[in-house]
Length: 117
Image (cartoon, rainbow, N blue to C red; front, side, top):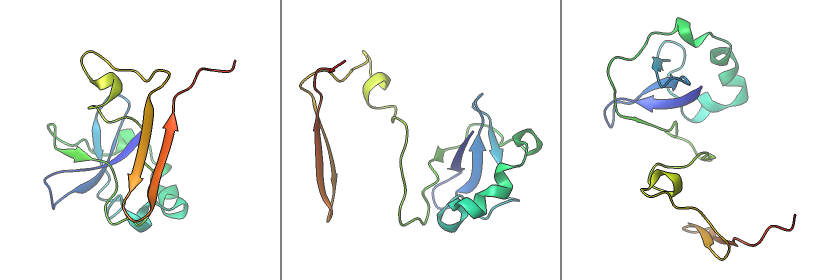
């Protein structure tokens, strides 16, 4: 299960995507999947509900991660435009360098090295 926001830009609604890709509505349970709604305390009640009881979203709406109105957030997963999402797939190998830059905070750099195992 993955929390997300779906719908047109500027009118996103809260939802969740099941393992089979179906998107279900969370509108009646939470005002949005953002900010205060994502705290451990706030998410406990919606997390206990059987997703199959929630209404399905019709069609294939535009959707995005649940990052509306948050100050701090953690991204997980891989966007489709990198690595395995490319044709042909691209993989990191020894010598490749990865960098993360955040304006005003700085930069992290990691180099892929041989395994010590």
